[in-house]
Image (cartoon, rainbow, N blue to C red; front, side):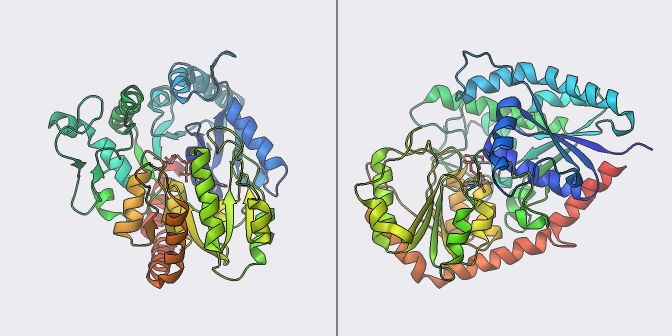
Length: 461
Ligand SMILES: O=c1ccn([C@@H]2O[C@H](COP(=O)(O)OP(=O)(O)O[C@H]3O[C@H](CO)[C@@H](O)[C@H](O)[C@H]3O)[C@@H](O)[C@H]2O)c(=O)[nH]1
């Protein structure tokens, strides 16, 4: 009797690896074996990051095995050059994945790879996998609206709303439906105002996605129908199976897939704070700030007089360690806690957390929504502006922290919005309602639950 075996291949970025692992945990929980593949450099980061925490990697009972393949880069390549990495992966990955499938199938013929779940941006391995007998499945870690936009690019191009660089050519917005927030022209996922070359590279990646989706037998998305019904309706083949949350995994934490060690000391610090008193500040894995912007943020937090937990990655200051304003750390003392990386979902589900100052990456968005936390939005690039529109305009669970004319968010603006957040019960009430909606969707017989069951039933066949 042959058992199903999933090979999962994320795009090598934090906001893609983590949600795919959460999906794999749901699959593994139903007794299906998963081999989770990262390129070598990411695999090493994950294993090293989990070593000094309570997170358990390669727990046999989890049915998940972490493995790595080479990334095909030469030693001279800049490890931070994502565009170069994408090009390299496109050429090298099909071969490495084929070798891996062959090795797995050869060593255990009863557990041959029966399904490949890959990030929607990784089309180039679907054909290889299919030829080797694995059903290709695309996974999108972004919103249904984000995937709807890319699936509609062929029409948008044909009707002249976009040019081949991805620049809006008719009007100032792109709208797919009156029930989905429109995209303003500089806030499309591939937009890079002032840098047409980068924008074109991102746009070219996006326009390949519809083809990938056609090749895949399923398109899974980390959202639920109830929070963005119109966007889900715009992509008829999309199966919403989210929001994927840590709390769905009773044995959590295991395989956190964090690229940095999670500093669990902030949980004990939160335990000593009153309920709903702490401002949690985190900008995901990619956003970087100028020193001037970091200073304004530090002053804004200090002047708010509220307790804050701030994630300051070691590269947050334009790739370097942040330098705080003179005397800042002494003045805030125990009122502020700074960590390099937090166990974010455990922070968001903590009763002391009041609100989330966020860049609005989709994972952070659904993690905040799924835990009933209101937002102060500070988008940085890509889909984050559209997620901000959902948060502030559609769901009404957050406020925008607006940049000034110089593009900098001032200490006064930051303090002002924190004050407003603590005075506005409506935002918290709406956030709690959204949490209930998500819980219902992933709970037994909910829409996301049923979609995931349908998918898993097919895996078992
Ligand atoms: O201290 C921290 C900070 C973040 N996280 C986690 O890291 C992930 C970050 O993902 P996300 O919030 O989506 O941000 P990015 O890392 O910026 O994600 C990229 O990928 C997302 C999914 O495609 C896009 O929506 C974003 O715009 C893009 O920047 C989340 O799961 C967080 O829980 C932690 O565990 N600890």
